[in-house]
Amino acid sequence: MIAWRHGMVGEVPGRGDPLIPRPSLSLPALRQAVAAVAPGRLPEMFAKMQEAFVRAGEEGSVTPIHMFYREWAVVVEIERHPGLARRLHDAERTLMSDDAQVRDAAIREAGEIVRTAHRAVAGE
Image (cartoon, rainbow, N blue to C red; front, side):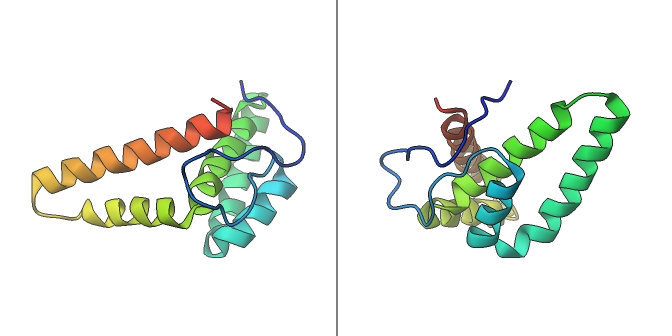
């Protein structure tokens, strides 16, 4: 289960200066954070939000909403650190390589970045 936080929380050391503080896991805070660090992704966020709320209603569970918050908190965690975001986007582009070893390295790099962001969001 996601631990709900209010306000902004601490920073993860060793990642350089973040563009914005880590937002709480609430819709207003996440929407504001996405608008600040990845404004082009707002339409995607709103579409996924609608899907999450529909699924929550269909399933009679808040789990899809918690998953939505967690997903976007991870996006923000990565994007608020420009160097980290660059590394992830470079790895994503590298997935198109014809070289299997290059693709494997990109998968490992992207996986490491995303797992680290998940841990940071979870407060680990």
